[in-house]
Amino acid sequence: MQTTMSRIVEVKPFVLGAGAKNITIVRIRTDDGYEGIGEGTINYRVRAIHGAVQDFAMYLAGKDPSQIERHWQALYRNSFFRGGPIQMTALSAIEQALWDIRGKVLGQPVWDLLGGAARDRIAVYTHAGGPSPEAAAERARRIVAEGHRAIKMGIPGPVEPVLDERAVRATVAQVQAVREAVGPDVRLMVDCHAKPTPSVAIRLAQELAPYDLLFLEEPIPPENVDALVTVARSSPVPIATGERLYTRWGFREVVEKQGAAVLQPDLGHAGGILETKKIAALAETYYASVAPHNPRGPAVTMASLHLAACTPNFLIQEMVHDDELRAEMLVEPLEVRDGYVRLPSAPGLGLRFDESLAARFPYQPKDTPHPTQADGAVADW
Image (tube, rainbow, N blue to C red):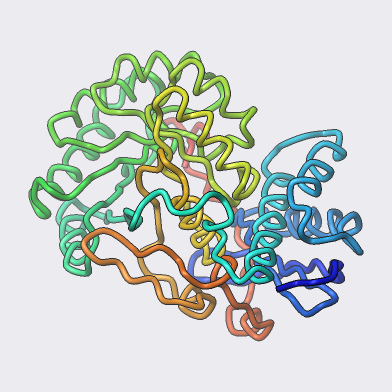
């Protein structure tokens, strides 16, 4: 137990290449030997996030690491230009690392510091898909055999505006093949990645309704909430959204207008652990569920599981199926059994980090995808 006030002496970002992704890890150290780990990953904006963390480090130097809410408020509000993906990703990583320190100092998992467990185990899902419906079905069978009971797929290829029967047919064929492969008791989801326009999204939802989806994710881009409400009211499938929204203010209009049954804040972008818990509390007042977005690395995964453990309206947690870096950084292994993982029990977030990982998993600069529509116009990926 800590008896005297400690001070932050280091805030340092590291970039690691992990398969097709680049992962940004933030390490915070204190003068009494504690170390906190967080993650702020945007695969194609690595250097921008790295710089934002270094900017925030000037404020944090010499501060008491236990004042998490105070530091969040200072970094968010005193930036003057609030929000945005770069600033919020850097701030989210720092906030996670501060919670990691706090848990380690007190010898408790973070979820226990946020009100204690609201459940006994945590439902998780992972990803399937492939170049053909048959390939997606085969991958889904393997995933279920390994212990998963929930799977998400995407829309194959870019989507044309207004009407795109090809995209609808291809998506339905994949979902049908996977449903037939895994049976009626496995939960299925589809991620539109905000590629469709409202008319295509509504048409897709109607065609997918017979396959008993848990939700249809990001059916349209996130900027127009009224358009999202139109889709939600027309869809026989529950709508999910939120991976590109930040803070409770970014989610407020979606919640109040009931644009989604499931909110998907990303703990690596939305503001961190406590901010996501506030978003979940806002959603709870409208009977909406929370399923945190997370195709990320080890720290966001663990932060999300701690949030899931103590949040009453949590639904299900996205998790990368197989991640070599995660195995290196987790204090306790994550074992999926019958669609669930156990509550984390290690102090803090349950993470460890060695600088040698940066050499073993080197950063690989990548450009974002640039898909096109049939006429050569820019498409969403």
